[in-house]
Each structure stands twice: as structure tokens, then as C-alpha cells.
Image 1: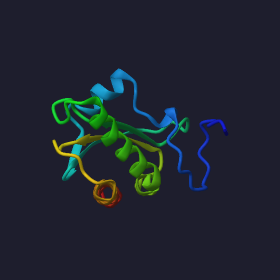
Image 2: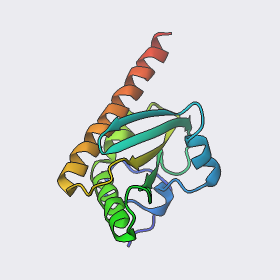
Image 3: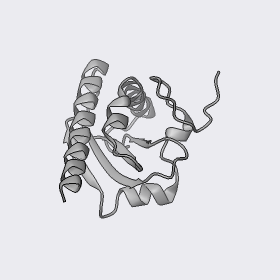
Image 4: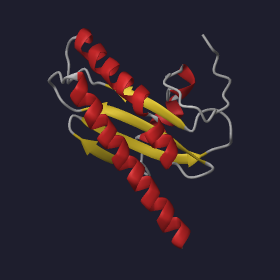
Length: 147
């Protein structure tokens, strides 16, 4: 198994290594405070925040969350998280391509539904959600360039 060195290659990667996970408490708290933006496509919600990119590590860090309030049984929560991970893995380049230079993205995907959803639907909605976020990032970049 290849080791992720932190350098970003231009080839398409379908992995989701630990370095791409949003884990630090300070980063997670910052993601859910003011200055963050959100977008929803049922049964998912994305909360995201742009941060400065110093050239080290991945440009996109992801948090996946399925509430115990939505699914009482761990089996169901784990399945939903697995569906999110798999869908993100296959389409993560959507977000990377939309990011401006010297900018990184912290994004959290939250599960809203209290019923299981088929994997194909989860993937379709996650792609739509990531495209919405990407479009918003591109519009914001154009707005900043025009000023």
C-alpha cells in the first residue's frame, strides 16, 4: 500500500487517507462557528469553511457525521457513514478543482434523514451537493477577482 507523503499529485486518486480527515478539535469547532457557510441537498448538508493553504497536506479536509438522533443503532450509522465515504472517494476531485490557489477547504457532511437511503441516491445527492459548493466557491472567486 503506498504511503501518502503529503504531496499532491495531479493524477486522480480514489483513496481517502487519514490525512484528508478533519480531526483536530480546533478545526472542527472553527467549522461550526461563524464565518462558515452551508448548503443542503436532502438527505445531506455540507458545512464548509475556506482556510489559507500553506502548501503542506491535502487542500480538502473532510468530516463525516451521522447523528445518533438520526439512527439509534450503530449498525445503521456506520452504514450511512460508509455510504458517504464511498461517494466522496469517487467524486472528491469536484471540490479540489473548484478551489482557488493558496486556499484550502474544510468541509463537513452531515446526515439529515432518519431513514436509510440507497447508496445510489446518496452518491447522486453528494455529487449534487459538492457541485453546489464548488459553484459557490467559483462565484466567490470571480467576485473577489472583479473587486
